[in-house]
Length: 193
Image 1: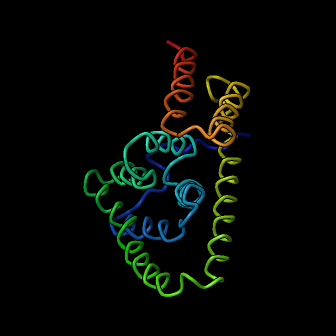
Image 2: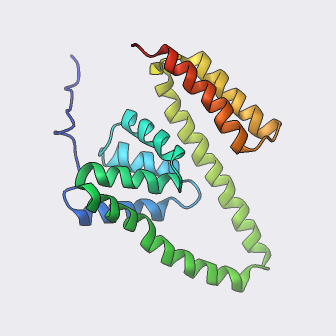
Image 3: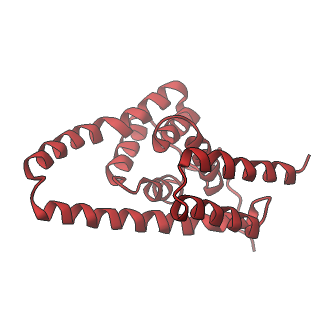
């Protein structure tokens, strides 16, 4: 027995601009340092406003657009449900309250920056953020089985990117067009006409 297929019209969606604003505000407040994992969990798993495949496609587009990835994604989701008003409200939700919180934290940091506990707390937060990103990568890796290139070429492209960035310490401005361009060209050739 197969699970019923849910059409885009039947799946959950934000019912108002206020709900959209508070959803993105909550998402932004959770996402300091490791926003990718939080965005996927909130929009795909918890709220189910988009599917995992839509998330991967939208996130890929958000990464190549100028500006912060998650802000670009919020614009896409807001526009999908409420047009221009939704895009503006989603961006306001992403930026307004976190900006006020960041100003308050910056004021506190300026007062206690030289304290050793502050340095330790920042190192600990960095480790947590790295773990969140690694966990999200593992979750998204499952979708590689459906990628036109297949799992092995995708793994080789991932390894090439890791080596170029982490081992050879090449700048992202070089790695992205070279490795990304090769990956796009190979995928384009595999797509059905």
